[in-house]
Amino acid sequence: MKRPLITLLVVLSGASFISGRISAQPGDGGYRLVPDWPQLPAGMYFGLKDAPPPPAEREAQAAARRARGGSASSPQAAGGGRNAQAGGPANQPGISGLAIDQHDRIYVFNRGVKPVMVFDTGGNLVLSGADQEINGKTINPSWQHSGGVDWDGSVYVIERDAHRIVKLSPKLDKFLLQVGKTNEKGNDATHLNLPSGIAILHNGNMIVTDGYGNNRVVMFDKNGKFIKQVARGAGGPADKGTGPGEWNLPHKLAVDADENLYIIDREGHRLEVFDRNLNYIREIRNDWNPWDVNISRKGTDGIGWIADHKDERVVKFNLKDGRILATWGKQGWGPGEFDWVHGIVVDSKGAVYAADTYGQRLQKFVPPATGSTQARR
Image: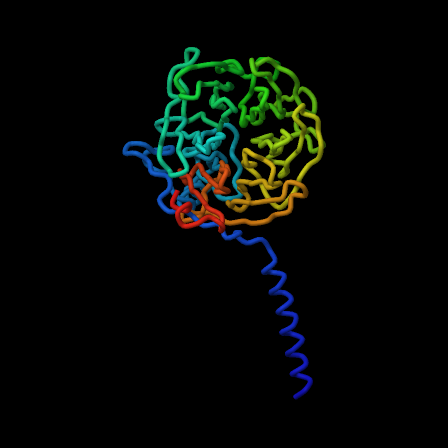
């Protein structure tokens, strides 16, 4: 009887050790979903008025197309499973990106009736627009691919498929600047080719991920004048690489308090870190496929956030070493789930906002220290 007892104790001890290891793995960090956030006015929606099919139905449609000998590679054609790729410039519905200003207003760049919608932390729509004609062309919401807000409150809208970025006044009513030539692609100092992300520094310099068509990251000054680029060579469509300052689809980016730039190399599954002058510093790798990255606007807490398409989840990570601190989410349309999570920001209270394309929604999560009154904000 002693031997089985000893064996049992050893097994239990091992189980306890394994359990301890498992419990030490990153959990959700205690973040809680705020229900019914935001409140959309009647007639407003993120993307299509009639929502696209859910994941299982899209996968079934993709399988049927494959069986007929058709292509299921584009997001519209089907697919959209968690390991599906973006399929180049084809359009998806829903929310393409998020930005947040110094007053905690959340800017939702989306493919619905108003290309830009602005919410306060209570989920109230306080501003919408960016649907006017600019330089002979109306902003096409189906071509949206994120945007940004500078320290003066001006708003930058990325029209990916028109190969341009337009800068609007804080009220979205005045056109201020354009980077790139409308409907003209190229990889020189005045053209873009399917740009994907932007960050604006305190001095007004713009860092643009010219990603889908050009594998390059470009710095422009506040007047839109080309300063420099980071690329393997010319920065053309086939100009892919895996080394420092090389890219396989630079997608979106974030800025810390020292204005270091954390730039997603999307198909390289990494972040490349540069200083404010676009000098390479290092890279950060982990088990993710990042589609968006955000750092609090204050940027001093050493924490970053990833919208991770690999597992359709939110990832909280340490900026210094890339260590994952918390995660939550999976593919789906339920509470706290995501369907092509494509945008993420964090406000000054630590609340996290995550948005997806096919799911056509924006969700808010509050940290455990947030009280019940704050949680309803």
